[in-house]
Amino acid sequence: MNRTPDTRGAMLSTRDLTVGYDERTVLDSLDVDLPADAFTVIVGPNACGKSTLLRTMARLLAPRHGTVLLDGTAIRDLPTREVARRLGVLPQSPLVPEGVTVADLVGRGRQPYQRWWRQWSEQDSAAVDRAMAQADVAGLADRPVDTLSGGQRQRVWIAMTLAQDTEALLLDEPTTFLDLAHQVEVLDLLHRLRAERGRTVVAVLHDLNQAARYADHLIAMREGRVVASGPPREILTADLVRDVFGLDCVVVPCPVTGASLVVPGLTAPSLARRPGTVDAAPPVDAALGVDSAPGAGSAPGVADPARPAPADPTVPVVRPHADDAGDPRVGSYPSKGH
Image 1 (cartoon, rainbow, N blue to C red):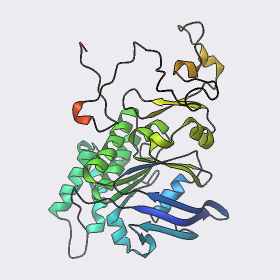
Image 2: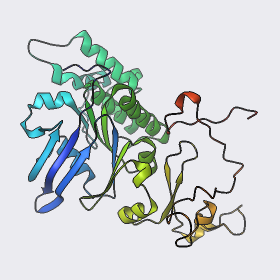
Image 3: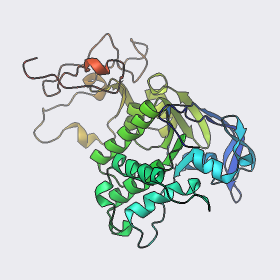
Image 4: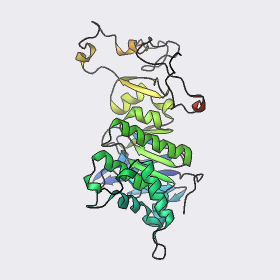
């Protein structure tokens, strides 16, 4: 199947899914629904089962019990080639074939479309060129992959996944090894694929603030179970972060996007006073306009919208572009004179 820009993304779900390694059970009777045409991010502490869930949905792991469904059909019953045309998968730390160039590796994403009677075509070349441009690796096309930096390699693997031209992309920590600028570029790309081309995107991320900024649907896991799922603005609270990660924090609106922003509380008293600052730094709750008294105003750890945080002249006011008024992730700094 060759996709067109308006092709609908796939829906993935699990029913009574139990998965483990040797004698250890990691996921036990798990029911999960990942919406089609959405960017779903799975978060949680280390060893909570995030990657195990992703790998099982990608048919890289066989469950002990239960089923993974792809658009309502058990994925184990589908032909391997069909699954490869519908699901693109980027695991953690994939092995780089020795001596393979960037263009060759990205081209391997087209293998599900090859047959003995249908070899490489102009359509395949176009898909590879498009994927390398999207991942910003076109300039590296002739370089051996094993000579690249970790960040460059990660973008090449993402390009190979994009070249598959699938209904859904499953990515396990896709921002690993990337500097901050390239992390944002990769997540922007994945968001555009969801928004402009109707792809279903599922990613495991460790950064809660990136998850809140980009996800349409958030799944928070702990010890092999789903603690909460839904839109980040509805479920990402200080209580959830404390329950899942054991971390005290406040959750406030991001000044750029309006998305939820997790600000950890002070865990080291020495951070409260830094050289060159005022004699006494205010508590984090007071600095962010949060009433720490129980039952006063908003929920614990959530900024009270009726009580704005003190103005900070070093933080620019953010106003959305008129063209982006419907997208809460997009903001812009005001022009001079405003």
